[in-house]
Length: 137
Image (cartoon, rainbow, N blue to C red; front, side):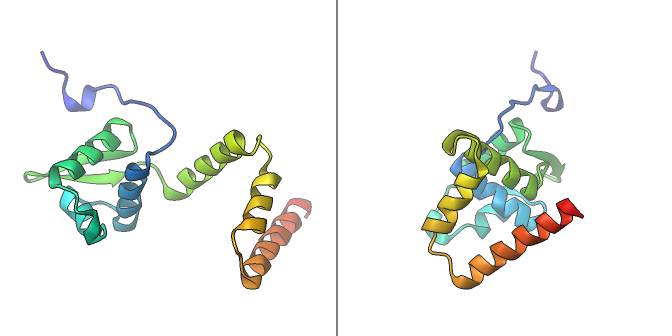
């Protein structure tokens, strides 16, 4: 006997693979969409087969990053994970695994090596100053 789709245990993982993140970025931009909707947003040189796109979205569903619902014969996928929450999770993981859990080291690497413009650096300074004011007042 097969287990109904809604009863299957979701796989749990914290981070997306590169191709999963590519698909999630398109779903976040769309709000929701079908396999075709997502594939149509990818650069034409990606040239992914429909079945490959369907597999990637099914895996995202199994991992609990998206949910799917039927609309006629088409599955419509909706992100369950908010983009800003995933960005925060990814940065925390990066800080922990690559920068010895020292956020200042991560920021220093970004500021030193990213070729940031003076305007970028001023924006960063303004963000830090605003955060310091909010924390102290």
